[in-house]
Image (cartoon, rainbow, N blue to C red; front, side):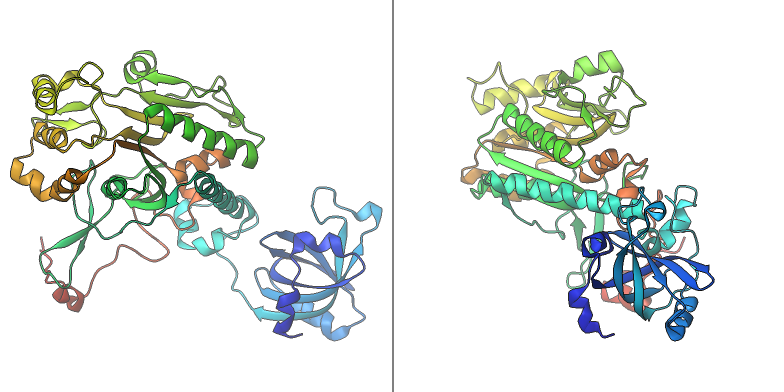
Length: 478
């Protein structure tokens, strides 16, 4: 057998289509069963698994089959035959056939795995699973999660591409700006004492793309926030980022509803959307009725196949930070303040009006909620530079600080910025809910632990003295 046969490889799930033919299979030994003269073993690949049988009439082949162990990587030549009726396994997609082996090639042996790979893995300590994540991902449940996530992201890309959106990548190394969470900082080797920041979101870049005339932008993007982790949060996560020019809040919410209905109906038809159109409630209404801004609206809380979507709108623009004695944006400072009663006023009049009582201001902000989880949020943006500058000052920023942190954005807005808005639904949480998993780590290939560690790569790790010297850094030893 030669590697040339890789080009003719048949996936195990397709084996029933080749009854009476010789085929080449490759994958991992799942289990082996010795029945005297006959040796049975299941071969597993990404598509599933199939039963193979080795007869004793070929002594050398039989002896080779006796050496096989679980998780060895092998290639197999064999003939597909129908099983006798009473031996067919109706619970397996390949249970109607088996493959009579004619040749086996061992590509790689395997040590005994540190845990069972055939079950769902819930009974195994999570830290143990994450230390050997490359093994944990072999289990069918995890592979199904990765496949579902792939299909969700592919549908998102197709949906927006078909509607004239451009997918544009934005920088990962950026500038540290106050956006609600701690930044991950990256020291510069060439400019000692200065730092890049990993983006909490592409917020400013996507708004600058609107200034650039892109008009319809999207991106499936990695974001980074140095904050406490929990079951539905990670230091790095993925979001669908969307921004449009010349739009209303209704335009954005209707577009997102169309996308999510399409995904659910095509990828998880067993799921049931409890109400359409998706209901909308104001922040005031939802807090008074449920005491939370992300209520679980399912009629039956024990039904994982019920999907209760909700849009929460009309959030307060500002909240008072007692510990800091200042106002802060509930969402972020780029959100437009609702000005239904002030549309006829000029910027100066509007700025004077909003400064009088920040607590009374309502933002054109909206959150996207599913089954008690916030799965996205967005807003119509403030595109008037003088009003945006006033918002930063209400939040306690001196004019010099505003210019230092946001001067690039304010400068850009002086060159003809269109009214615009967007939304950023999280991919991880949505796939978690579609897959019926208890936390987002189950739908991320290589996640961090609950306390932000990568046990497989042993990160974060220490930097050596040479690396620190190149960066102009010295660790303080407490």
